[in-house]
Length: 209
Image 1: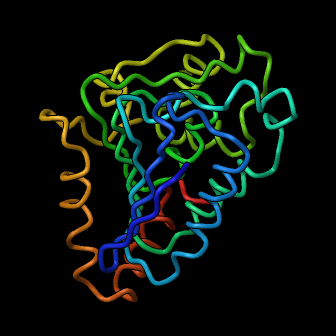
Image 2 (image 1 turned 180 degrees about the vertical axis):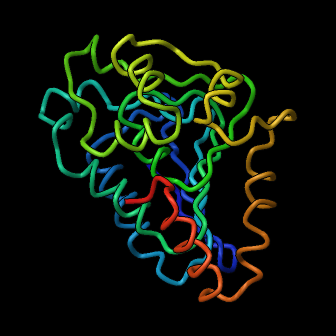
């Protein structure tokens, strides 16, 4: 239920469970984590989804088997945070719940204008994944992190852009074209050069692990 495509040094991972709003199962999370970990030769990583929703978060049937607290969520977000090239979340639509983890771990986040962001852990009685609140607060500040996590607010794309949660709202909606243009300079550089610049950025307070 994920598609892995390789275009030269760019690896694209697409959630393909569009009929279920790309809700995440344990197998999908494991496959995503494995794919990111295996992308050792890639210089750019793009995450996106099929259909009109990036991901509705955790599959609620899978939640009944303990998926909410499974370590695979952290394995996935950790693998993305450790990716040595440039990672971009190209949000084709709304991102909700646990799916926020992989998005927050990316270097850049772009979205279609219709996208919304929400993380209803308070309402559902789950804790967020351990690294998510810190990454969220680093992007939007502690108060706005509480607005999302504790007040359960749905954030529009324009609000998310103003908060710093999104880096760009793509007016024409073609997030994949924009993602490819954003990684162009990185894939044209040597891997060592790209890694050096990313390390310098991380050393000065970005949201990497």
